[in-house]
Image (tube, rainbow, N blue to C red; front, top):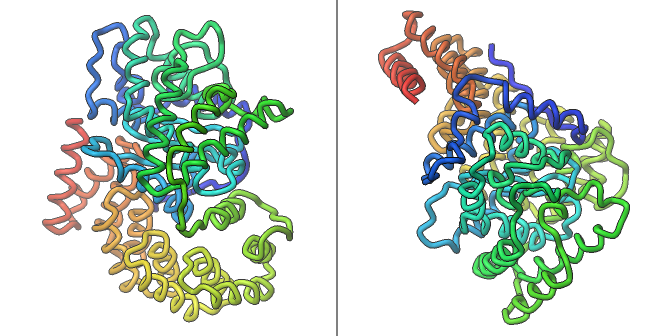
Amino acid sequence: MLQFNLARRTGLARCQGVLLVVLLLLGGNARGVGSELPQLGEDARINIERETRIGESVYAKLMQKGLIETDPLLDRYVNDLGFRLLAGIENRVRDYRFFIVRDDAVNAFALPGGFIGVNRGLINKALNQHQLASVLAHEVAHVELRHGLDLMQKGRSVSNAAVLAMLAGLLLGGVDSQVGAAVVYGSAAASQQALVNFTRENEYEADRVGVELLHNAGFDTRGMVEFFRIMAALSGSSELGNIEYLRTHPVNENRIGEAIARVRKRDSGTDQVDDFLLFKDYLEYVSRDHLPDQGSEYLRALAAMQASDYRRADRMLSSLYELDSENIWYGIAYAENLERLGRENDAELVYRRQLDIFPGDYALSLRLLSLLKHTGQNQAALLLARKLENRYPERQQVYFELSEIYQALQKPALRMMAEAEFHRINGNRKQAIKLYEQILASGEADIATESKAREKRLQLLEN
């Protein structure tokens, strides 16, 4: 039976940074991150496909170690921001992925291939969606301008191992490695002995392109200046030791001044609804074991639910939901609390009403799917899960849900197929191949399932 554990809680200790370096360098099979990196001494013509493989490999290892926030509602929000920015890029060739890192250090980074990570700690410093979007826009700009690849091609004497050690340390915001900065766009170490750093021109160029992306997406471009000022204020505080972002993206008055000059030339007005504060509240809810009974009405309701005071949470959340029944943050929290109260039918009704407003939404669909499984509606759950599989074929959670449904329906071959797909997406190639082979040897699979297993196995063996 597939075991699936999504660790949610607490910041990362410094020692975990060292552990991740070891895991990245030594863990897994020979086709890990290191084997995908080009030899930096060669005339490196790194195409998009190879660049993406590097990013995918590191992202998969981060996911395996529970360092990426997987809550679908939080993931939905940060990707909505990111893809609004991408809409303004003509002839885009990268499939971007935006994600939250479970780390309270203030940092953001981009992996090769367009994997943009933002730490929980940085999100907590931002005050609105425009400020967070400015950070994402800056990182996207580094990727689109190929700053990291240009630096990679200059780092001819840097070994793959040094590159990986640098990468792991910067992702966790816990190490000042001295070599290999080129792999992580916008995340070079501050040491004078570092082989390469992003130049002032790189940072200013990324700011300029970032402002364009913000403006074209309808964000308030003043958010970039505002966030610069927040970072500048932190640079003089006792928190500086935890502000990795300032070491990799130094903020000074000249940079702030240039940003102000660019923003003033634009109409920065925007009337878009901003759910950023609800997003931050929910991030606190999934990240902390004990929320204090303070803050917004929504956060206090989440704290009451976390404290098992479901009746009090119901009074608060029902009022918020009645006030705005089209708000997904209120709807999901309200329905979740109804489940805790044992009112499954009412919870299902809320989920379905929300899905009428947001058809096919991944976060809502997963909540409804979990409820259907819990109440024994396995055929209805299977129907919904198959729709999710068609719509989101590379989401590992979908295959976890399918494996449990097939287990309940006593369909062992299909359960193994779902487990194999889960492991394939999670980067566990050996386990996926093993399961495909078990399906082929079982004699219990139908022709279609056997054919799919044979094809998937062959693909993994060839790649």
